[in-house]
Length: 135
Image 1 (cartoon, rainbow, N blue to C red):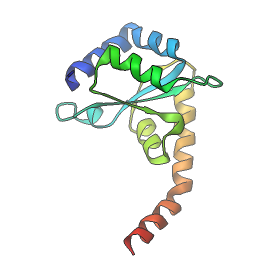
Image 2: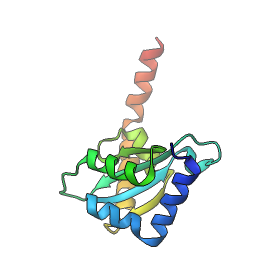
Image 3: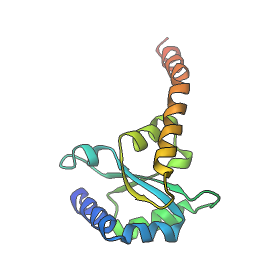
Image 4: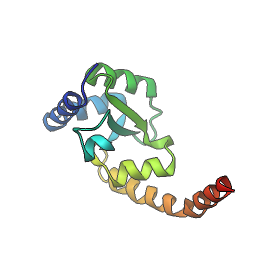
């Protein structure tokens, strides 16, 4: 079992030397972000949260992504596909996260703006759902 610190160190080293971008390109991933507790407080995190998005028009293989990242970084990595994530999860990964790899220029900014717009649009619905659940 890989430690969070070791996983994070390897991920960041691979980002800095280009190996992470190369792995993403091989998998058709053009955006990779790091978010969550390992970004805010790595000493107390239980895993490393990473979100990914496939290149536009590429029907990626989530299992291939999980397998490739698992082989390289171990089981302390928690992967989330941005393209199918809910609006709350997506906005956290994009607004409160950092870019690890961006192979399509401006993809992060474009997805960040779109995710925040959807998050705001759905706010009344989320509030109503919580209200109904509380009744």
